[in-house]
Amino acid sequence: MKLAIQIAAGILIAAFVLIGIGMGFTYASLKAAEEHLEQLAQEQSAKTEARRQAQAAETESKRQAQLVLKENERRRKSEQRARAEIDRQRQIAFERQYDAPEGCENPSSERQFIECANDKIRARREFLEKTP
Image (cartoon, rainbow, N blue to C red; front, side):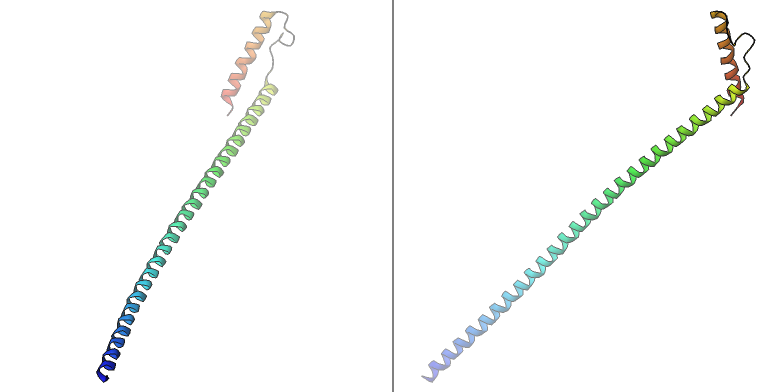
């Protein structure tokens, strides 16, 4: 009977050892799986952050492009207004200095009207060529 108790005790000890070893393998497997899942989560998080940053950069790039377009349009309109003002000032200067030939104040015929108009056109061209 003593031998039977020793054999039973040996079997129980072997069973506990095997269960312990199995639990160790299971724990190691679970730990490895947990680490793998954590690594995958970090990679996914990094990809998501990279996409977010790329979208933010694209949005900022579009915003900057819009600002450049608006500034260019504002500058173009400003230059256009400045040119129009210069042209207006040059026209005023021409009108101040232009002295219509005799008879052009009230032309008596269509031919005289055309000659007076042509004279004024020639005088304006000469004036505008001479003034910057």
